[in-house]
Image (cartoon, rainbow, N blue to C red; front, side, top):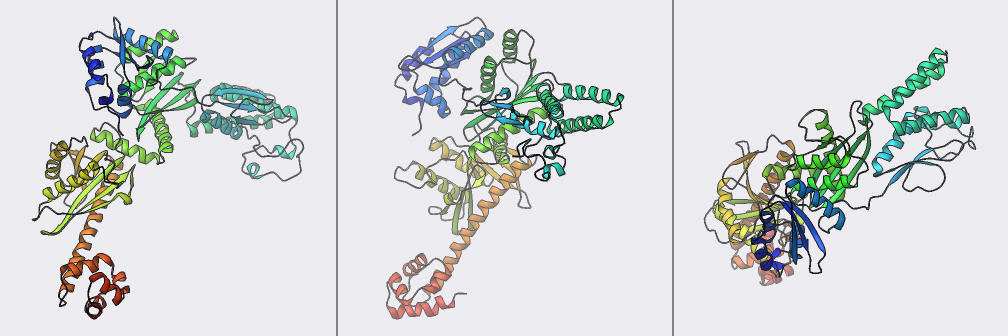
Length: 616
């Protein structure tokens, strides 16, 4: 059952207390019945901000649940917005309130291991166990996995299961040697000293990055060339080329980039994810993904996340890029500068190289969500884009679309198709026979259908899963008239469901989305949204027109049946309701027909001869 703020027995007390609250900036501290702090927030105007919790019923479930548990609250007045921000960060760090915590210390760590063997291997390990040398920890497996894969490829180190020197010369070199992905250590052509030098260069590459490794290797290559050791110099030349290729293809090396953090957020299915790319010493040092659950204000979420993230950080870089403009940019910049003892830039680039890296971070966030909710990254992204295009409060995962079909004033029907996270849910499709509208009137028919659908939702006796969940958005196959006819109905039911029409051009292609005020939202500029809505409109049209044709076919059969003496409409309907397809009718025996229609065997034989046997 959905939790609302009205479930709080102290609501009137809290509202009365808030009426006398100061309008100064400060922090508010929400407590439950036991006196435990459950939420801490800041505000430029304490009264206005706190009032929204106790007077606004349009909260996300997480916020509504928090408010339902508030027994009382305290507040601390500050002299400025900045002081409120610093105080909020300090209080959250101290008390770790249940509804504030975005970052939890439950992430695993990974390491890069250089094994303690005669001929060492470089591997990624989740725990620091056993003998050997460990580099790390890394806060996500992404960086350690990528670094190990890259260093083994660049330095052509063995990744097979052979044991050295035991297996020297026992078998032919594997495919990796043939395609120049391995130096072929199994041939026994490298001394311990020569191999140790390669491992040392590989470890230095991991620690210092591409730029420093290339400089050191270039210097050594030139020295070898001057000493006429051309064969060894050629090996280093190839290694330098491999490092440069790796940097180009994997986008891990940005030669002139200072230490930088890049943040991007994605939302879907009531889940929020923020991905962080950390660049250090001109290379991608780490990538972290944080699943935050359901969030409310996207800008506030980003601001709170930045504060909590850097409260945990060992080092704060000089440059921070984020995918949206913040309201508290100056205050957060000042806070980070005081914490790090150096200036910190916070920017939202609109173009160029940094915009491309923001897009990369966003893609990582989307892909993390797609794994979490079982959908592809493209499906997650298109629903987010649709929500932004329509200005919806949350991502429209669960969508219903309706269409009306008729032949004049006869055989009037409607169809409802359902899409859940971009995929059609055919088990929830519904067919409606229009019952209250006698003459052709698509607007009145649509009102009847939506009314019946909502009645089923509100009916406690209804067990149909397709009716017991409200959609995030409703689309009607039609324009302004359809939306205007149905919108008052939603208001009567006091249901806040976004409603839009889908209009087509003169070639019967989806052209635009119509809003409640009759304005149109063009979708042609977004290829993915255009494809999604076109697919939705085509499906509801196909489903509804198929139902209409089936009904018309049944009426035709009823007419043919009633031409037989002694067979009326009720008996004809009984037969067609029991045997719904031609194949079922043709398979029915005279005894079956007689029992269903409640007629004599002689009359059933006549029905079979004059009607069923004549079906094509």
